[in-house]
Amino acid sequence: MRFKAKIVQDKLLAFAGVIGAIEKIGTACVVHLTETRVHLSVQESGSEGVDVYAELIQDMLFHEYRIESRAGNAILFEANASLLLQALNSGKTSPTCQIKLAKRAGQPCLSIETRALEIEVVHDIPVKVMPANEAEYYLPPKVHSPQVQLELPRQRSLRTVVDRMKAIDKFLFVDADMGGQLVFRVEKADATIKTFYSNLTPRFEEMDANTCRKNMSSVKVDVKKLAAVMSMYALRFDTAICCIIGGYSLVLHVILSPINIGNLTYYVPVMDAGDDLAA
Image (cartoon, rainbow, N blue to C red; front, side, top):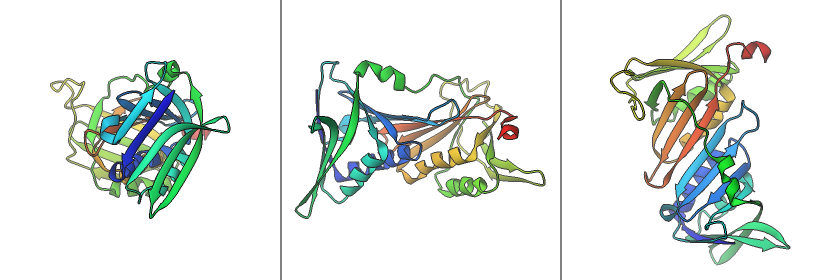
């Protein structure tokens, strides 16, 4: 089993950004390498956790890429996202960075080598290698078709709004319709606070454009979990699409920039009406 790749500075910054966004959700990051793709996933334990999945196109990300294994040239392992982010950040000023699987004192590691100003820095991150056929357990979940799909505004003010609402209540309602309106609201016994976004672009993929134009949906989510997801605004992205599946999930699909480098998808569980009573 062998893996070695080289990545240049601008793509390293993009890769570090994706790892940084994933690390906000959890540190146990499962990496699935194939000949054409790099898949990353973090699955929070329990049905109330946020799951995040990234799919990156290897030849758009890496300058050089070599992978060999007996499992059809696929490798699966788990690494600590915080350690990986720290290692990638150390190479931000390096023209190139080499990433490879290695062994150190018998322990499999992901070795990240950078060089800047004639100083070579090596980070060896312990990994847990798993059978490649277990990758099926780390795939995105199959979900129902959303009632509403809207492109989110590109302004980072949306992230600020969620952060401020986090200080008001544990839960946040997300109301949306295919007419292009998105509303964030928190409700207290003595007041309701709402923030409106209008004229957003509806997306009709996997929907019947003739019958869903009047669709509306509303979900209640844990505001701290949504705030962690909003860290994606630190990324360079082309489009972010909010998909609301009433009673099941809020899905946020982020198409990264450059547009052909890959995507990042979050699955945020929604709360039942009585959950705040039990909290």
